[in-house]
Length: 310
Image (tube, rainbow, N blue to C red):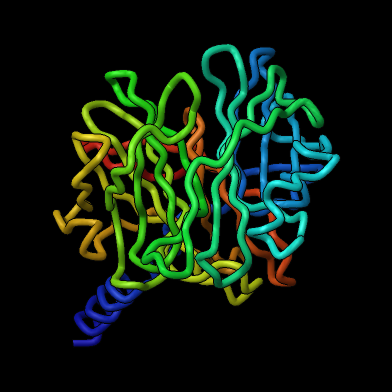
């Protein structure tokens, strides 16, 4: 009887163990790794450039994806066109960084915490370096009367060469608009819905193509609360860039679905605001002291094509 009880107890432990215990800890990074809402790109010389939330959009560089150093900001002279949305603050949020057509593209957000009076702007640069970014204009904005929030942009180019921008936070969830590839600005008035939690916490979309599917990564729950943050990374997929996206169980992301691939554990709190770069997932998390840090983990796909970290 005792042996049976031990087996049952062991089985119970396995069943009730927090899923986060199976997730890897952040990989090794050193140097200037205090970041929030990171987005990364590999530069033409093989080095890495990271843009993240900060005054004028903060920048960091690395030659090996391990050691990082501060590299100034995209707009060291300020970005006066954003202040109507930021209440005069120079702090700009949640950039999306990419390299296409021989230049660097930067979509970024201007807002104040808890408000959906927000805007997403575009800048381009020949090098990505501080002070070389040119303001290209307003892409999309939201007002307090809208049921969406124009922050957390993410650019994806589909297999047909069409450009799309996903974005969104809380309210009615994650949205998508079409862009003009020549300008990077909005091309029509259609607003598509990709994911939502009936007003609950969902934000930070990131869409990447792998195999036959487009994968939509999002962050569920609460950011920006230091060690009390509950952010976690979820994913769904679709054969079409515009959706519908479903999770591993077939639940639509527009109905609150999502398959979890990363959550907090131990002294790693609230990992999220993810960005897929080649074979890694880049994100931020909080330490026990509430400091935000850069997280990087290798990304792979299982036999069914679903992503996991290691």
